[in-house]
Image (cartoon, rainbow, N blue to C red):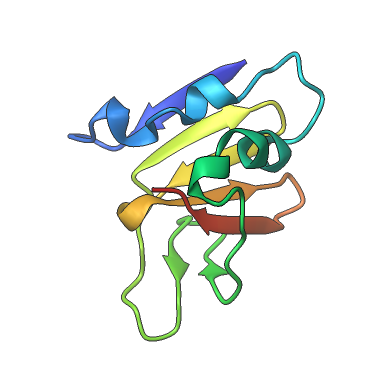
Amino acid sequence: MVSVILRGGIDPDIWGLIPYWLDPEDPRPAAKQLDEHYQHGGGWRPQPGFKLDPKTKRVEYPGDPPFVPLALMRFRDETLIMYQYSYLLILQKDGTFEICRMD
């Protein structure tokens, strides 16, 4: 099941095709499924260097202002968080995460 939470004023289209690429019947994690379907954009390619605040879900990258979450999507035990500039973070239950630009 996929559920979406948006900040006020955020257009649901911020997700683009991502909800259609995630199949709850497919046992693979979100990153594997996104990698398969996003080949025209280079696949799922995590970008290192981001730091995540576990309470606010803000992310920071050295030299950039903090990014605030715009929308959250639950996919099984994973939380997908969309940020400005098309950055998508996949957060695991144990607090580990990967972030990738998917534009």
